[in-house]
Each structure stands twice: as C-alpha cells, then as structure tokens.
Amino acid sequence: MPRPDDETRPHDRVFRENLPALYRLAYTLLRQREEAEDAVQDAWLRVARAGEGQAEGAVRHPRGWMFRILRNLCIDRLRARRTHLRIVSTDIDIDTLPASATGTARADDAAEAADTLARTRAAMERMPRDLAEILTLVVIEGMSYREAASVLEIPVGTVRSRLNRARRDLRDRLDGAGRAPHDTIRPGRRP
Amino acid sequence: MMSECDRMIDVDALIDGEAGEDAATIERHIRACPACRAYRDDIRRNDALLRRAARGDAPDPALEARLFGPSPGAGARPDRRRMLLGGLGVAACAAGLGLMLRPSSAPDSPDSLAATDFRTAVLGDFATHIVADRPLDIEGSDTARVVPWVSARVPFVLPGRVTPEGTRLLGGRLCWLIGRRLAAFSFEVDDARIGLYVAGADGLTGLLDEGAGPVASGRDGLQGAFWRDRGLALGLVGPVSASRLLGLAGTLRG
Image (tube, rainbow over all chains, first blue to last red; front, side, top):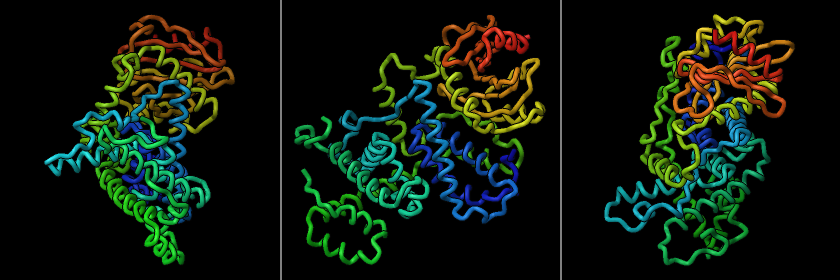
C-alpha cells in the first residue's frame, strides 16, 4: 500500500502540479468542497498504488490518466449518493437569487464584478454535470478536445457538440439571470 | 430570442484553437454572420468569467500537506473545517442560498441526521464497495499497520478494538457518507466478507442509544448490527445472519 509521505513514487510531480485542476474537476462533479478533497485524496491513493514498481513515463499521458481515475471515483461517489437516497443538492436556482445579488445596476463596480462572478459560479453549479464538466476541462483547464475526449472516454466529436451545448447553456443562464423582472421570458426557458 | 446558426460549433473550435486549417473560413463566416459574431463575443466574455471564477477554487492547503507532506503523519488528519466563507465569498452565498432553498424536513446538517441514515448509508456502501469487491485503501491482515493508517485519517478516535473475534482482517478504507468521514474495515468470517463502519456520532439522533445493545437492520440480502458507544456510531454489516453479526458486535463491545 502506498504511503502518502513516500517521496519516491512516480507520478508525484504530475499529480502535484495538477492538484488544483484535479480538485476543480472533483468540485465540479461533486459540488461539495470536502467531498471533492476526499475524492482527490482517493485518486492519489489509486495513482500511487498503480505507480508502485512503475517507472516515470510508463504511462503515456499521465495527466489524462489521473483525471480519468479521479472522474471515475467522483462518479462512484455520485452513484453512492443515489444508492443512499441522500442527495444533498447544492444546486442554486439563479432565478431565485435575491435582488441584491442578481445584477441590478450598481454604483460599486467591484461589487458588481463580484456579483457577476457569483452568478457565473451559481450557473455552473446549476448546470447539468456533464456540461459543467466539459467547461471545466476545456475552458478552465485548457485541455485540447483530444485530451478532454480521452479523460471523458468519448469521441472528439462528442466533446465538440457537448462543449457547444454547455456554452449555450451557460450563456442562457447568465443572460436569464441578468434580466430585469419585466423582461420577456425566452421561449423554452424555465420561468 | 437570440438567432442561431448551424456553424456556432465551428466558432467554439476557433476560440479554442481547434479549427486548424478551417480557421480562415470560419473567421470569414463570423464576419458575415451576426448570430455567430454575437455568439463569439458572448463565449469570449463567459469563458473569461469562468476562468476568473475558477481562480478562487483551490483545495484546502491541508490537502496538499496530507498527500505530499514532508514528514509522516504531518497534516495527515483531515482538516474538518468547512470553509464555507472561503474562496470568492461566492461559495458562502451559494451555501446560504442552499440552506434557504432546502426543504425544512431535509437533513441539512449532521445535527438533524437520523440514525436510520447511518444504517442506510452503511448498508449501501457495503453493497457498492465490498460486495462489488472494490479495492480497499489499505489491504492486509496486520492490525498494527492497517488500523493506525486509517486512524490517522479520521477525525475521531477509533475504539481500542476493531477486529471482531474469529474474523480475519482484510484491510481498511476511508469513506464519506451522511456528510461525514467514516472509517471502514473489512473482515473475512464464515467464508463471507463483512464490514465494520465507524463514524463520529455527533448529531445522530434516533434509534442508537449510547451504551445500549446493538440493533439489527437489513436490506437487500445484507444484515447489519448497529450500536453507539463512547461518542461513536458503529455498524457491522455483511451477508450473514443478523444473530451472527450481533454476536460478533458483542465481541467488540466488551
């Protein structure tokens, strides 16, 4: 069994360099900070175990491999939540944010910028996980379509179409949240 | 309603540097297509927002220490701070709203958890991990190696004895259930695998009374014996009879 304090394992460097990115993926999927950290720790244990007796370089694309391991662990946790019939939703309906946080014009630019970021975060947490996930990998982490396809184990064409859906979804959510109450609700959008 | 264009997917590729030799063609199309121009401007703005919002999304520094800490045991115990007000302050807003929006009957914190949640969670975890033969975090029958490893990673003190009489330890793992960290151990007995789950009992209400004898509960062919002892909630579960599990639990309570 690997020991987390063992400095001699392969993959240490890659995992450590990607720790924030790995955490962000876990948070995107699990939407709970502490559980995301636990998932990253579990992923590290898996990576370290797999790396025992392996020379660095034995895995051709270690970053993608680590993301895949983490993602599968997150999916296991999501499945387990369903098994336990205890899903604590962190979804935020941005349409219900109080007026003080929904983007009416403000004199204070800093507050408005923070508000915009808050709405962006809320939109991501409200979005279906597969769409939030592709935005995290490609837009935030800067993965190529090919690398994202490898992590998600889907064809590159699916990455393209899913990313397009995700961006449209985000745009709709942000546009919708920023609308004044008297604005017309778009066809097909939830009131 | 914003107009749409079938080539918006190509705009994505251009923005992401994935257009290759089609880049010039797509740029020409964007110049001629108001919908794609608007879409390009929107996603540039939104992508920038996403990246800025993500800057505050970092794991607790204790996590890095936990994984790569220079000295054995340093920072090994998980940091239990929730840090709801950390990061951008956005998480705090989201968490607050989450509490506001959650139905009042929902178990929204450990304070309102019923012991039945613990039992359901433990039986479910056993089914998804042990029955499915998923790997343990630390494997082996050496109690002196397995128990301290798990103990260093849970926010409570394990009982002095975790191996029921007549069983063979197979290993341990950490799990996250009902909003808290649990320690789990797997044993072999009577040609079957059973599991012992241990959690801090803070906030668990209901059927587990401190010091009372174990109660049996089962689901989907699995049985469990559950009890509460010295501030801990414990569950011994497996595909063996309830009476057998109650007997084994008794050897831990002595």
